[in-house]
Length: 311
Image (cartoon, rainbow, N blue to C red; front, side, top):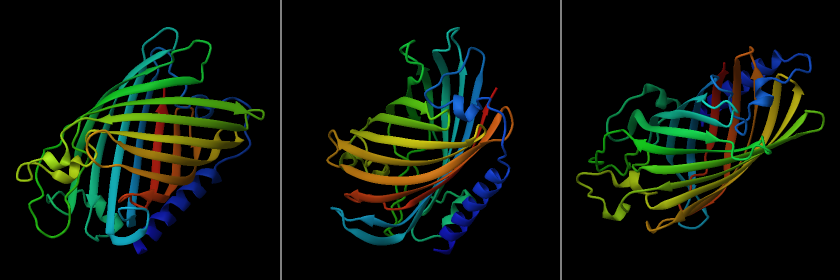
């Protein structure tokens, strides 16, 4: 609990410092207003996003929806996205997404993820996935609708959990995956308000966890193989100035069984903010909480801090 309070305090300070700089400015549209995920880059422009999140949990549901207490599990994820515009009409972007993870399991402190150790058991870390991606604005007449499709490739070593201590070793999902995200936003109220929606379809390939060879493969990392992950997200943003925004968000997520004999669903709520530090760089901080779930769904909190540069 102390570790979680420390993270909340750090996030609150980041938000306070960020919006402490927010002052009245001119009516020019900033990057945080213009370059939502729905908006694509011009030819030759670059978009680099460095996003860090910590998810920590001491509760999960049982096989139904009843909450039960578990030893703390904490998962740190760094996601680096790099995209560039390649078309004269600003309707095609290409890029890649990289993920680095560090997990602390079996009751360790939430901040232990920053040790970046990997003992093959209750501490795991490393570069986990690489995903080449393309972004497309399919309709010229709908500039605020686009989609991103990517192919996720696991690059970490496949190793079994060989320690019998009731801690299931886990680094990341051990599967190739094809993910497509659809984005749409609408700005109203004199550029003071914005609604943003996102629908994701992520199909996880691979053998069933029940068919994995436990002496050669990590069974727990295959729980989502042969399934479709379908999160539906909505954000409502308010812009106190053209360079700052605060938002609230909600997500309903489904893991649909397509052959792995396992399915889940969950509901989460969150809030956060962004601030345009310079013409190129902006900062984002957010908090999210999973408020309900079904079938061994974690009921934890996510703390996120990110930087984005557009040039």
